[in-house]
Length: 495
Image (cartoon, rainbow, N blue to C red; front, side, top):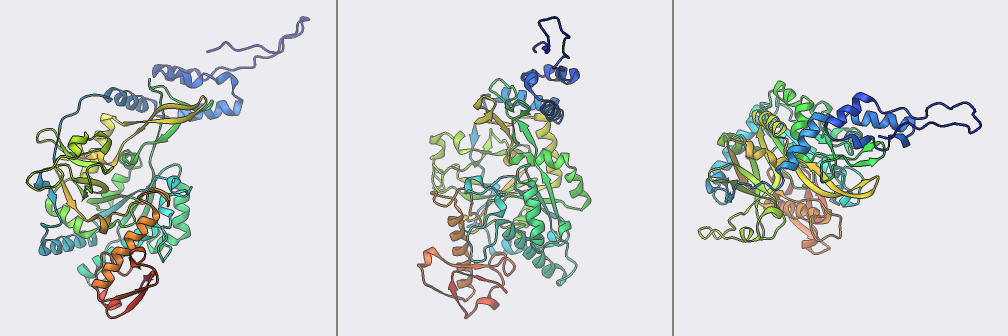
């Protein structure tokens, strides 16, 4: 650190001015030195009093021992050998073709009963902005161009309302069913806008007290030697801690205790950017309860070997199920075929549709915090030196799976449950337009199966009808609305 400079000295022997610089708070500087991060104060002498105050507060808000542990553990784990992977055992997966009608019906009723008893909560990962979609709004506010103009948030809220109604009808003759509590994880970049959006739309018909917002954490960005990158001379560069930050956020905000107080036993967890997500799916919940496992995931069959999706694998001989990202899967393994089934050996894609027990969430939150290993994403980070190459530290939602004593996978059809919204229209895949068409095509099949007819002035492959989630959750109960009626596509079918 530079010596304080003296100003106002006059060569004619006049009076000496006051010392212009006051040093950084000594105790805080010593703490930073303990963790090798004293460079955060390198430009202290050039800061205004307000900027110094901002810098001190910025650093005081950091949990330095925790941040240091995460940085050290994550850098140390880089490049360490990992156990070899094996395909997921067949017995761990419920495939679409092997499911009987009786099983599906039994799971549906089991799920509705648990929902009616208040045992299910829904957990939405919604920390991302719609930047890649060309929007500064939270992703959930995106209107994908459906005839109704509904946003992703509204579609999901209305599916929750529909499931609540189905649970009430099946289990108590239409009354006395518990509300499904919806926990929504935002980030510092989306929190305010998300809350205002829900308030402005009166929670889409849900009760305001059945929705709880909470924020994921942020973590400093670091150079390759683990030093904080400074975004400005008085601010540490930080980034959200990934969608796996949900575990520490639930723990630190005491929401795991909140769930226990409400009598919740199961948590349905999903990402916001899926236009076809079956929120609070009774069949999946019933399957999960029936299997008696700690963790579960819906999976879709990988479309082709090079598809850029993470896949479930077994880590080590008899080890836990976990997810390997496509970038980490050797091309020869990605294209290997199971000679008995004719399918890819590693074919079960992770699409961020998960189910956990509350007991397991408690275990994961403690385990991940203790192990403190985050993924290192090498990025160009805006800094006082321009774009600096460094690391963002993130956890992923699937980091939970290695902690699970038992995991079950549930195959779903991508054309029924997976319409990702990740890129702006004009991109080659996963756009609002491609998601809109997937919704319209699925709902068109529902309407025709229920005895309805379609007319259309544009080719049918480019249009279709939208069924309001308030009418039908998964194509059920549409005969009374559709049978014998003709609908002109595109349109929305409501009550």
